[in-house]
Image (cartoon, rainbow, N blue to C red; front, top):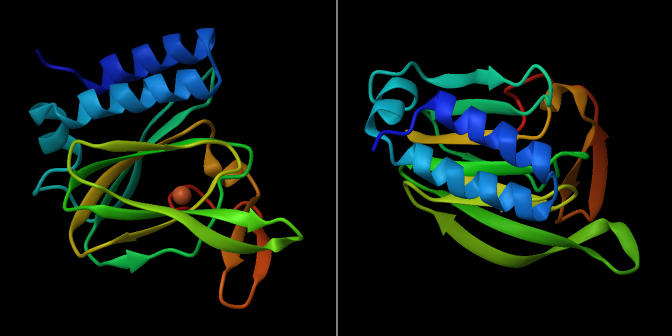
Length: 179
Ligand SMILES: [Fe+2]
């Protein structure tokens, strides 16, 4: 049975209206996996003919959650970051993304250490709840979808340098630049 972007957005809206908490976001993660296993969605939004770049393909006018596609020509390793007060669900379409989860040291909010690593393969989605710190790494030509609770250009967020043990706050970086 096919599962469209409209199906995903309608079900995400219904889930969040009832349950905008960890359990609800986990349900959204599962729905994103359904979407990533739909051939029509994948060929339209993260297929071989899609132009490289980041595109917002949906923003809910009421709840404000956003769906973005990432068709990335070049590999990238992001610094560890959070998504401000928002949650994020990342779902892989092509190639893979290696995720690292970080935790803040007990005695210093600027210092972090890695606590868990895992790889998202095509068709798999991962939830990063509000305030959770992660970094991502993907190869050339990776393609993925990201859903956030709000437009990230409206959120200030933390970006860490684990080697220096420093943290900086980033304000209003603009949609599509937050990974
Ligand atoms: Fe992120």
